[in-house]
Image 1 (cartoon, rainbow, N blue to C red):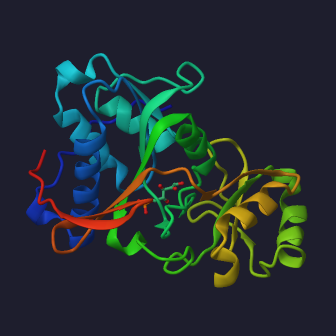
Image 2 (tube, rainbow, N blue to C red; image 1 turned 45 degrees about the vertical axis):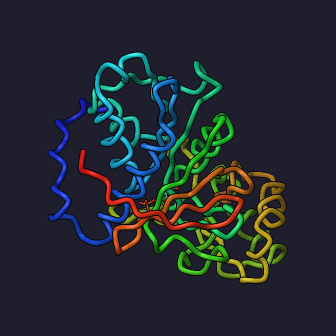
Length: 266
Ligand SMILES: O=C(CO)[C@H](O)[C@H](O)COP(=O)(O)O
């Protein structure tokens, strides 16, 4: 890992765009409700909402954080933990995590979600499964009734490189995703390579199929060569969505409620 750089000072609330403000609101609210003094092992997810999670945890103070250990889901969260001077650990040392907070690409009515837009979903699922409490944070655009509504690239699937063409064929001809593609890198020739050295396939499915995410997740996972599927079914206890009006929608298995938050900046 390269030497961590100094963290940029957090922008003030007023300088943030509406989307950034809603991410920050979701992250701050989730930390305030779920990262309690008794929690000592904390999973830190990936994505653009997670820096606000870490910012809020840091604001809880050195005294609380000195006895805690933070487990990252990938390169990004590892750097965040290190530059924030929090204690870094790994899931092989701490296979039971008190709380994991992570971002999501989309969350449905039953708290199933798509993850893996950042290609981190293998480690993310391990940390979600290891956690006693798994919490999602996102902006209002990710709050949907059915997966695949706004997030259209498809279900991220991590595959071992030598099996990618075979898995693509299975998806095209057997599982009903004719437009599944290998994810290509933006600033490098060739495919995206995950933190685990694998390739990522994005597989869009019809709304009918996505209404039962568990079934398609299990069918994809059975394909030899698939390492992990970016569908997290029945794993999260709650999802926090920051809204444009400064309120926060909290989704749980009991339904959805809107709370007025307008949290103070860290
Ligand atoms: O699953 C993820 C990475 O694999 C991210 O949590 C997800 O893509 C959300 O990211 P962002 O908050 O940047 O939209």
